[in-house]
Image 1 (tube, helix red, strand yellow):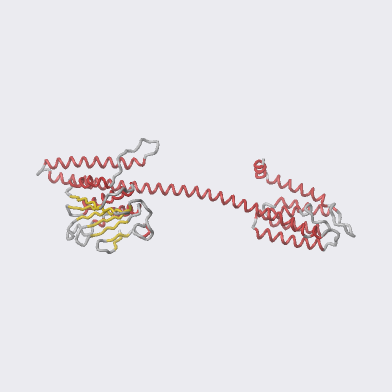
Image 2: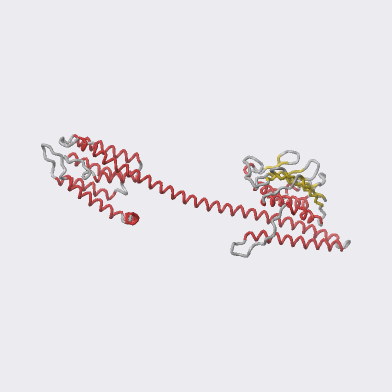
Length: 421
């Protein structure tokens, strides 16, 4: 019932205003009989009826001009009181409705100011009208209370509307925030998949290129070994296709066929990774220090990809036949180090690895994403070193550290000086 009435008032505000005006004019007829007794008779009743009707009709504009309507309704009530009529609820009804609308549509200070001004003038005119037979309470406290009550109700109504509007805004803001967070997570996932694709393609293409070059070089002098290398080349390209299929499979929709269920690469595959470089002429030595500890899947994949990218850079840029991978476990971290032993006097070695496009940037982003840090630089004794310190469990990067992207993405040379990629 209440909801139906509320919907009706929302749809037909003019009908409600007309009903209020009719009721108030009817009350004005009754108010004409409640005059103050005194030696002089009050003015004709049609005076009071006309004044009240003016105040009531002005309420038709209370939604658009609440201040003007409050002033008009208050003025008609004061005028009627000055003619000798008792300021009862029937007489000051238009002023009460006008003050309610003013408090509901403006601020508390404005509504209180209008109410106090009308009360002071109304009480003063009533006391000075010469009609002294009525109780002083009916002349002062009663009109003051009658005019303050709608102000309080209007203020409560306005605060309730503001609270509902605030709740609605919060709900809309929360929905917008959820959408933005969802888009951010999608963007992060796309970036992660892009890094995986880069690592897979760069690693396997580098190996395939090296194997094909070696086979072409020794095809005439040692055809048997060339055939073996070509067989390994086939295995390399097959592995690349499998990893690409697994990575791209993450982009499938839920209603499509299931993605391949191949295991996610991790440090357990380091021996296979090292062996894949053997056919290219790069001997990779893997050393494990400490007791291997269980890692988060994200940390395990990050460590593997960093080693993979670092070894690919060694093969592409460094003039060496040997590289070392060291994995050291501690209570709360894992340190992964990749070192090549290239001759520092060779012109291709001097900084070529440090400028290998987006390789270092991708490795650093991977380390940052799990709360770790990465250092890379030339070694004083020659060669290049990539070192990553990763937590056993994924954590947010600490502000101001190397792992914090806001810190500028710095890393350090083996000599201890800063170098920016």
